[in-house]
Structure formats: structure tokens, C-alpha cells
Length: 315
Length: 315
Image (tube, rainbow over all chains, first blue to last red; front, side, top):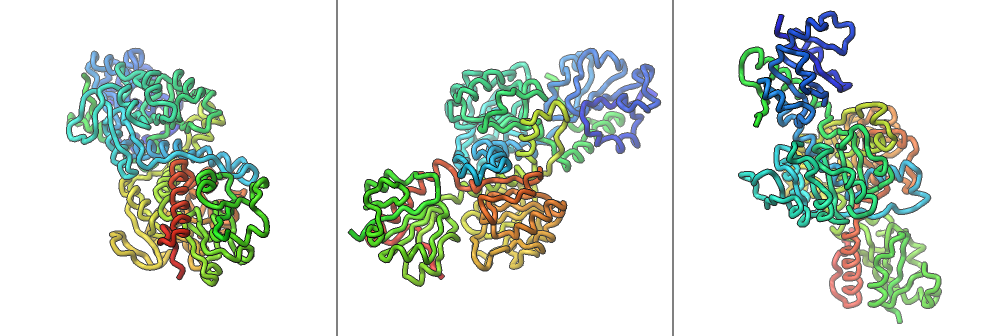
């Protein structure tokens, strides 16, 4: 009995259900008709399947005394208290590189959209303004831009590859210089920001990277500078960013993530030099199918005492 | 006296004026205060500087009996009656490759936007729907798509280069196979459409290419197929396209150009799988500066009896 999987989700997509139900003792507290779930059943949970960014903290962990493994569905795991998991000897897996290509594609899309004002132009047409107001304002060149990648991991490397095809020059910041990366490394974000036209933010959110893009970095980027964020909202000091954007001291922003999702600062609604996206970087049908495979493979490996596919290292 | 340049424009951007006024006997019929312009002055015009897509037809040409050269500001010249120009021995220049990189960047932006629903997602956030309605629908993968380029010229080649960085496979259609292009060639548009997920339309509009994307081609592309058009509106049978999009028999479209610009079919306003752009493919500040240089260099070359920089071949 003590070998069940608990579905722990705040996502409206229940893509994993049918496949999981056929393979494991599967508990879903959200399905009210599920006869298996009770406080008694909680004692049997060995794997927590965490879909979306549903919080996993001490309180969550206390409920499941037999818990040994948290299987996550995202690349970033800032919603899971990893220190507490390590303390309790609970292993954690993430989505691995499943989303990396899609997030990189999306990041490039947000950059082109922000520089060339694609979404704003689309609003202009749909409002019927074209025949009335005439030409929509000019945008800015993508080709040849100097781009700083903040976080040269699986997503950062993929963004670099794509932007080189647009003749962009690449520089980067990460905890330390990466082997086999041919681009200039900047240990300091402000230095990086001073030397580029665009910052692409795609690092992991940790205590060290919280507000890594602060007011000084944004001032260094300058009033024609562009920020694209496909990492996590709290990588940027959002309050400062909004103020700089409103004052015209920052050139524009393509934002897929926000500090207080799903709440987006209202001041941004009025701006045509920002693109506001509801955390859709990895939201691709084909990829969710692949993600299911990874999550199921992790659960199967766990019960078979085999190495987990995408276990994260606890430092 | 018979060596003046006439400004013939329907664009709100008068970027070329100051530089031109200092260099040539420059006539601007739009500037009411211009004392030089009169029907007498028209007889002195040897060069017509055609900014935007202002029509140049027999009637226009009749006004300027000394005209020898039309300097265009765009890549496509379907607004200029080239047959009539040839008949009268009038030479014509275009923008050359000035816009090619920007249009290619924009085309890729429209493709990502259409597949990943970026503009629709931005509308969703600005409408305040994210906290209320929850997750925005999934998009479709860009990475690895099979892309058909319609017109493998200066823009088509640049689009191919960029999309290879997204692991897209490329095939193409043009009047005849191009040397040094490594991608599969399809002589027939319908065959090309049957074998790809996306058609990128970027050929020149001529009598032969008018409605080259007809109903049969769109049906062959299929209900998950995407069209991006950065060429000219009349390359697509727009009425048929709108009908297929509304019925869900075509997957989506990223459209920078329309048959009856600036009028856009109203039925498209309601669709989230289309991106509507007001002919902004080349509308980039830095590029207009370069375009001025090309136009001025053409005018100078003309008056100096030197070869024109970007003279088009009249077939």
C-alpha cells in the first residue's frame, strides 16, 4: 500500500492523468470523487507529482510522512523548498531540458516583438487605426544587436545559437565562466548591461539571483536598452523596472514572468514598448507530451530503484 | 534648369528632405510654400523620387516630359508601371537589399508570434484576464517546423538562414531553381504546401505571382498550416484565406501586407490565430537612414552619368 503517487497541482492542464492512472496507485485530492484519498491515504504517499508551480513547503511535506521523491514539471523549482527537501532526504526532479527549445524560441519572439513593436502594431490594426491614423511608428533593428545573456544554461545557450543567426553579438553573465562558451564573460551584471543593447534574463531564481537585475543594472542598460525575461519575475526588481519604463529611462521589455503572477503591474498596460505574456515560455502542446514522458519515466525509475532521469543536485 | 528632382510621396516620413534640399534642385509639390513648384517647373523634372508606394502610372509620367529616372524607396515596385517606364526609356531604381535583413527579422517574429500566440497572449494580459480566466491556451512549437519559402530572393535567403537556427527544415518555390541554394526546390506551390507546416511568402508581386497562394495551395497546407506574408497582399487570394481561417481550415497567419491596404478584412479582427501588422516589415529607423543614402547615391550617380546603384532590370 505504501507506494502511491499524489497529484499536487495548481494547473488547469491535467495532461498526465490517464497515463498515470493506469500505471500507479494514483491519488488525486482535487478529484472529489476519488475514493482513495483520505488522511489515511496520505500516509501511503511516496511520490509527490508537482504539476505547475504548486507550493511545496514544510507544511506540505509534513502531510506525507512516507514521502521520498518530488517529481516537478518545470525547469525552475523556486516553488519547492529544496533546503527542506534535502534536510528530509527527499529527492527532487525537474523538467530537465524539456522546455529549453521552446523557451528559447519564445525569448527570441519576445525580443523581435519588443524591438519591432509587433503586438502594438497588431493592436493598432485591430483598433481600426491604420486607415485613420496612417503609418504606425518605426521600430528598432534586431539584426546586429549586442545581446547580454543572464544565465548561460540550457536556455541561454539555445538563445545564443538563435540570435547569432540574426548577426547579434553575444556576451554573458553566470556564476562563473562556462567551459566551451566562446562569448565574453562578465562577472558583474552592471558591466554586462553597460556593454549591450539587450539583456535576456534566463537564469535560475535563487537567493543569489533574486533581483539580479536591479536599478543600477537597468540604468547601465540605458534608455534605449531592452530587457527580455523568460526566467522568473523576481530576477528583476519589478517596481524599479516599471518606474524606469514609465519614465522612459529604459527602452522596452518583453516579459513572460512577473514577481506577483498572475498579477501584472497596471502601469505597463498603457505602454507600447512592452510585451506582456502570461508565463507561456514553455506552453507548447508537443512539449507537454514530452514532459509527461519525463515525469512518468522518473516515477518508474524511482519505484524500480533506478537512477532518476532529471534529478537535481542539492548543493 | 532642366535638372530637378521631384518629391513624389504618400508617406508621412519625410526623412530624405534636408539632405536632398542641399544637394539638388529639389521640388516638393506637397510643401505649399515651395515657390519653385508650378506647371512650368514640372517640365524641368528629370528625376522622380518616389517615397512610399505612391502610384507612378502613364498619367503621372505624362506630367513630366523630361523625366529620365524614377528612384524608388521600396524593394517591391508594383506601384510603378514598369512596362510604361520601359516603353518611355525611363530608368527605375529600388531599395536594393536595404530592407532585406529587417523584413527577414520581422517575418521570423511574425512566425513565432503566430505559432506561440504572443500578441493574443499580450491582449489577454492587458484585458486583465490572467488572474480571472487562468492559463492562456497552449501554442505550437517553432523548433523543427517544416518551412516552405515562396520566393528565394534576398529576403527568402535571409529567412532561411535564421530559421535553420530554430532547427527548421527548408524547402522553396521560385520561378526556377536557384544556384547555391541547398534546399529542395518545388516548381509547384501546391506540392510545396503539401510538404510543409508553414509557408513564408516573400516573392515579388507580378502578373505571374498574383494570387500565387490560391485556395488549392491553402487547402494543401491544411488546417494546422501557417502562412506568413511579408511580400505583398495580392500574392494571396485574401478572400479565400479569410474564409479558410474563419472556418478553421487553415491554422493561422502572420500578415504584414493586405490586398487593399490600409483596409484589413474585419473578419480577421476576431481571430487569435492571426497577427495583423500594418506593413512594417522594413520600418526600422536605422534602415531608413541607410535607404536615404542609397536614394541620394542613385540621384548623384544619375546626374554624374555613372552606373546607378540599384537599377532594376526591365525584362
